Length: 615
Image (tube, rainbow, N blue to C red):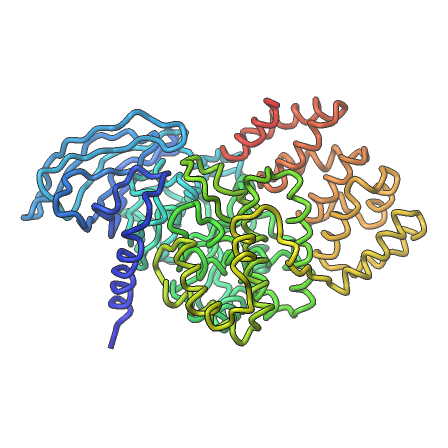
């Protein structure tokens, strides 16, 4: 009988075989076809005054090439103090090393010269205060204002800024850690977390399942914890913990729904942390500890599709990982498809259809702003620049639309076992699009050739836009909203008579998307006065209303100022600044707001808005 540890070992061996022939990840210096990290141990101390993590990383190595004598790791802005190798008797000896000249995107290769092939290597180092993966918040940037906060965001190639690793999704490893942090602050990681831990002697962690480096995650701050299910809990700042626990009460139901579709949840627990508002994205699927934006807390669980998405990554992305970022759609396209299926099981086909129609409409609307060359799911361009691979945002809905097309034509009784088989057969492995295509042909298209011809398959993968053959979802509830919207825009529908008080968040998002740049300032003022949109607690609704208001010239500066000062999610912040800077009357005001808000934003958000200002 195979134990879980035996199955993991077999999966790891299969992963080595499956990826041995992969082209070198152009975003990593690591020679992972010569040697691979199988385990990582971190022993670090967090210094909030210096904004650094300092200590050592210990790597356990599996040498694939018996002639190799150099270990190459990815780093960015790491100050290396010394390197040691473990002798056969367990003692440690110094090793010579060098750092290459820094590349602005990839950082520096750390080259460790070795006389033999040691089992373990230790690198003593400290991070830079400007480490791209870490944001150090002052107390004023937190909810209570009492203590500082720090969190990481390692995806895509930023893990190398806080640990010397083979920073590529082609390499998976288990890890453990001991982290020292100031008294009164809790440390959590993408690993097993002890709810009863006190931090005395350091916070200890263990991740028994192999993960790629971009899923290495840490957060330190004033945190409380509440269980929301038998295998799930939420961590958040004390002033937000009750609201977070209420919002995430359906988590266990979501786990069960996903298991019913795609097999057992293989990560033990599914815990979550709601981070301060500067977290730049909606969520990050760090296994065992999903990182979440507080903007998903609406008070009515209406934005729970975000949780469904991050949970779905437990199968697509975390369990089966893109082998390099060129194959990004294997992570996000699959996850977006799985999200809709989870939502359908929990909340019904009607809700799933509404969410899906919004997703498809926003994908089609985005095409006008995406260069044609970046609209493919997979590029044939070998360029090492990650920005040339594909548009990150489009990969989500286009990849999901492709899978939905296969599902519609094959039928769920055929497609569901096919997709589950992909996850089962490639569990804890890193995969390429070519591997998926081989699996697709062998397990679906060869048996059902009418599902999709080669020419259409190529159009989905390598062509621009959304193929004309794609079927669009039409929600009947949206049809009713559309009829009221058109009449309202023509002035034939009285605002007070709109049935909007009974609309779901998806109906409001659909309505606001469609009136953007069509409704005038007077109409938006009346809509706001009737339904209180500029004070909506649903950030998805508030964002869309603010955007439409800026375009129409309806003054929402007071609530918009509060929004931009308190929300750091790029999805909201960047479009709003883009709209404001495009209008001379608003541009100066926007620059003044940004000057005050900038220190509150994550470095990635700062980079995006700085780029707008330079234009």
